[in-house]
Length: 261
Image 1: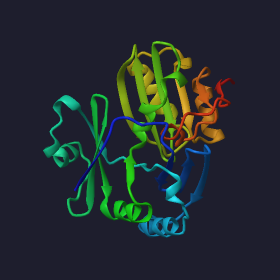
Image 2: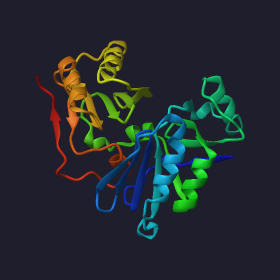
Image 3: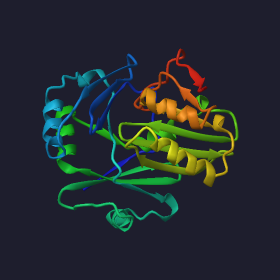
Image 4: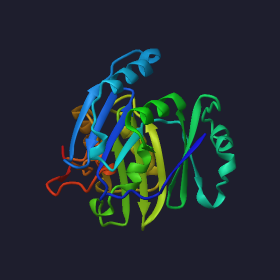
């Protein structure tokens, strides 16, 4: 089974975004521009059962929204240039890049974004549960959120290294002169992990100014301190959580600030 999603996010649509993560659920209401979360602390083997219980107890009036958007934080994905993409070889692309896929248990989701095709695997019972609970659901990958952040929120410089931090992962996109050079999702297990990845990326792509790095999302004070220590001029976009890029336009009172020691 395969689901195909489009390459455009219409921000005029009244949407409810639901981030499904190992740590729990986070909701973002695109109408009121408010967010709330429900923690989920269980052992790995109990995670899905606890998630389903939490979702079952969640009360949402779906008639208030034009769209329910499920954002699944998963590393089970790969990317293919659209010019090379063959829709009949989706499972092959995943397996050849080391992404496990079980035909009997997983659903292949194909997301188009510009010249890139995202392929990612989602467990079928999770998809069935969400559609049974909320009706029609659009599935998105967190990395697409980093790509779809409104360009006016980014710098007007020729280099734009954007980092969106999630629970346990970080999405990174790099543009230079309007050309996308990098789009990837990295695993984050400690406050120093973002520093390690950014140090490697800035070296590989010869980014010499830490002011070219923009960070949004969810990050602890310790992680922020680590980033500022190694990248003194790094900039943080305040008020943008990891779901805002999927909702309506960001409020005008959100602030962008630079880090300092």
